[in-house]
Image (cartoon, rainbow, N blue to C red; front, top):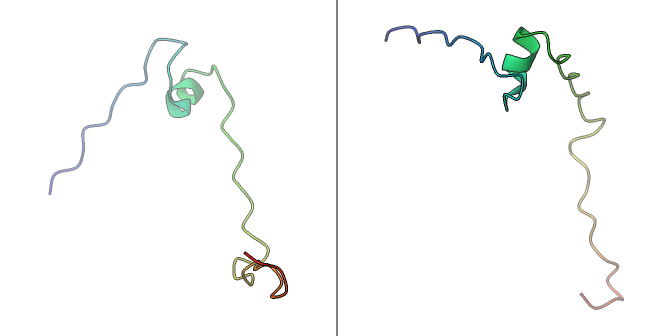
Length: 52
C-alpha cells in the first residue's frame, strides 16, 4: 500500500482543524488528556428500595 500524500496546512486563519492552526502558529497544541483514575468503576445503579 502506498503512503498517503501529506496535505499542506491551510492558509486560512479561520481553518476548522486545530492541526492546521498549530502548523500556522495561530494556536497552541491542545493538552493531552490525563488517563482515567479507575476506568473500571462499578455501575451506578439506584438503590433497590427505589423504583427505577
